[in-house]
Each structure stands twice: as C-alpha cells, then as structure tokens.
Length: 106
Image (cartoon, rainbow, N blue to C red; front, side, top):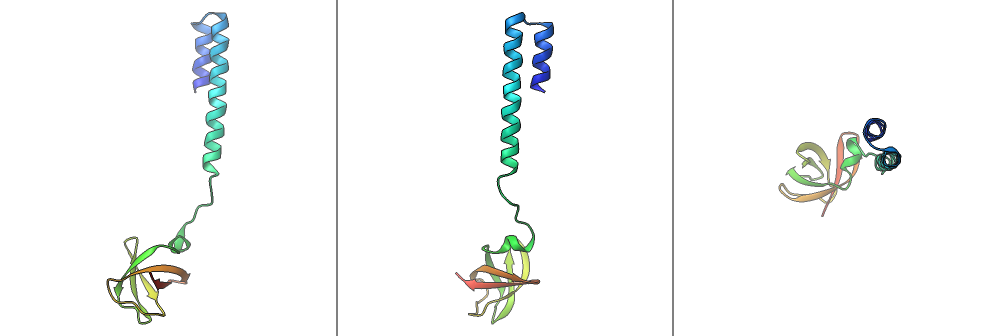
C-alpha cells in the first residue's frame, strides 16, 4: 500500500528527484515489512490440542488415588496420579493418555 501511494505522489505531486527517492524508500519499507511478517509467522510450531497441556499446572478437584479429576485452564479432566494427590493440591501434567491426564505432584 505504501508503495502505491509513493508512486502516485511521485507521478502527481513531487518534483523529479524526490519522487524517485520516495518510491525507493517505499519499496524498501514494503520489502522489510514483508520479510519481518514472513519471519514472524515462521517463529515456531504451533502446539494445539491435548499435547499443549503437557507441562501445565493443574489443581486437583477430586482426589487422585490414583484416579481422580483435575482442572487445567478452566477445564475438568480425568487424571491419574501414581503418588496420590488431595483435593485442592497443585500438580503438573506430565503426559496425556487418551482423555486421561497423567499428573505428578509439584
């Protein structure tokens, strides 16, 4: 968009040497902003779904001895904690097995 505006200004308003300077600056701006946008979009793989829960903190809703329920990011999940955890305790998600989270005490 900046390049189009610069070309119109160069043709219709600005005198000869300044018009070309403006077009060159606008082209450089467009190239840099395109490169930065491309680079930002390639910053890393997206982690979505249940795999994104690994490493998240969770609060035990119903005691896990070894099976129970935890709340992670506002959602209730069935959980398994081999060490056992009481209601209200904070745990960490270490794996996802189907629809069950494997958690450990912090």
